Length: 358
Image 1 (tube, one colour):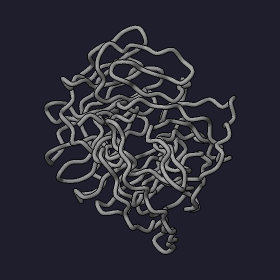
Image 2 (cartoon, one colour):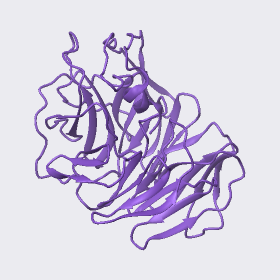
Image 3 (cartoon, one colour):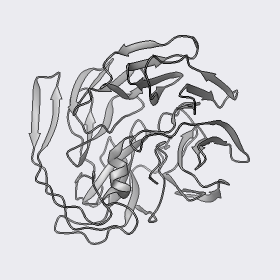
Image 4 (tube, one colour):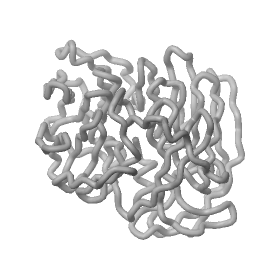
């Protein structure tokens, strides 16, 4: 997750001028390019302590019917442990349909790891919350505002420690494994796929498998590239410009993106942001999948399972903004139907491993 959501949260709190933009959508295998006309952003909108929709999208102005209530929502990258839409407000974990929980510390950034939570605080401690205990499991180096401080998948979490070393933690056995030194400077963890960690520094892009803790594989020596996401062997690699390529069992797909993109757990869909619009794409065809959010501006940002995506939305209609309060909702990819929105407070942290406080 990169600067898009930071923009949404705080970079333009006073107003958002309406850009004149066109969405350059998907290019299939580098040959097929589809251009879509973008609706002008609604300008002059302020949010109390958060930034308005620097990267939100008109995904559909429909009624917003409820998705299948029997479908289990699973946190992004995990294979068990149903988790509802969730956010943190200060030290309080809030989950739709579940009681609030005091995590015991002001949360800087956080991610789900199965039923547990790995989080960072203002002292850059990495902590594990297991429901009945809060334990320090490491420290993280200060991250750039656009970079994740922690990433997670299945039972694993990874971060860069205060000495610039990549570390991976397994909640099943509480084991911390440290990667060998990378050749460049300013190491950062960008994605994790099961046990395999993806990192980048000033010298290139790397994959590290802690089963072989003393070695890593160089993916690219181009420091402009970065593995934005990885799921089940499918890689999403950005080139440092506005292009990214999805490569995996389903084939190759080239997209235009402004650095934010998130693959579904099965790699068959992704959410992305381009030119101030969020889109949901089928990675096998490049087709855009519409969602009936019921909101004028909405950004799919996290996969709950292979068919469910969490959406950050702002109120409004095509004729103007009615209110600027952010909302969370979930949508089913297979039907496009979305549940009711849950209003958010002025300040909140989403389970993306990125801090929205700077």
